[in-house]
Length: 154
Image (tube, rainbow, N blue to C red; front, side, top):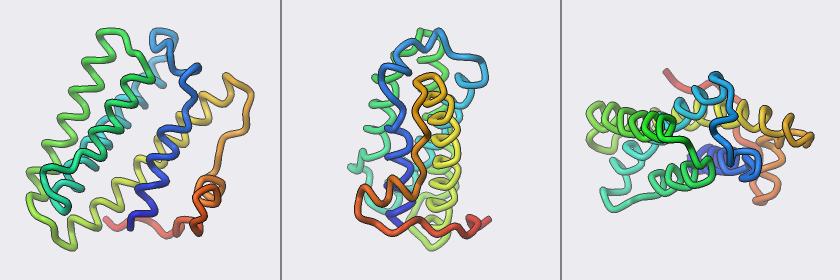
């Protein structure tokens, strides 16, 4: 189960800092994708804390890194943080303890995050002219086998 989460982190951080540094140059669609990714990171943070404990700050740290890298204007910064907090509150209320359902939700959340990060990566790589990384490439870089391609549980 950790493998999809690792892939999400890699995909989210694969966005080049130079390409992200000017958030005011982002199209509304890209800005919304960043807000959606912040929501998913908030969900992932709540789900991970349900199983790892409140001291776990893994996904919150990734959110901070995203904001630092993006250097958003005030309006986008507010939207990103509100979205993260809303995603966190939503999943924390739904999954206050670690159960099988919490683990399944964590996997589904990772799949949504991977999809959003891949979309953002494709946009950023078009700007830079680089081919987008694939999950297989990212997993190979870590020495992992590819993430299973089965649909996420509902």
